View 1 (spheres, one colour):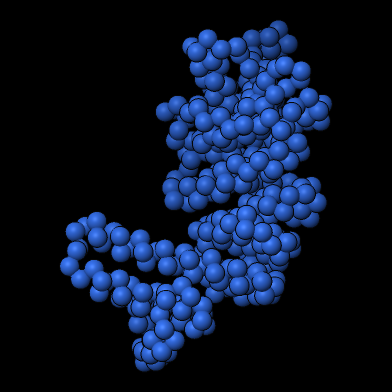
View 2 (view 1 turned 90 degrees about the horizontal axis):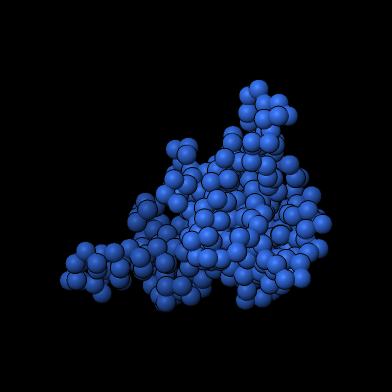
Length: 339
């Protein structure tokens, strides 16, 4: 089975934002339990019952050619089907907020490329099952390929390629319906976030609903790692500031707030480290130690301005309590210091 993830980039959109959605999507659907459950709910039952979902394995072959690379990104799985066969499931991640007008055209080109590669490698041809994953605002119209054509009668239909695709349009689900449909907490949170990510009002006012099972998630190390991925996705995909997110997390639970603060501080510190490394790469070798010390002070003052306590700042910067108190005094004298 091959799962193809594709999102359209033809609109003038921020490439960094595209990469943010793409990375989160691939992280979510590269997890074995989550991809198994998603496929079982996304494909019609009569096909699912013939799939061996435990045999799902990631196909790392590059199937996107230069013509589609500007529009799509793909994620591919192979899976056993029936007693001895195998299929490819193609999960298409549509990135833009508007539905694709002619998805069959792009899907057809992609499928033919897969089959052509199999022919060139002397392999047997396998069926590709496309799943379109869409999280835009406007409802997606899944219409037959033949409806694209003008003046098409029954005699001409035989000349038109005929195939279907499965559709997961998050705009057609309420938050409750999405949460009830999937058992995996990671899937629930991930899909709810992707559904609401373009509406910051919903994110702010419904985050307690999206994170209803967050405390269960962060009980394990794996869950904490996924929460870091969630935090990065939220901070990079919205203009909501860290303090507002922290306030919302505090209303969810103390544990949620603590985990968010820990993750946010790691991101802040990594940003400083990256800046220092960039400076070194440019040949700024003199005064490196002084630069590192200044960088640590900068990040400490940023954390002070964002309301973090002394112990949290000390944990991430290794500064002493006395040093932090001194920085607090400096910050009070000049509220714009290092901002």
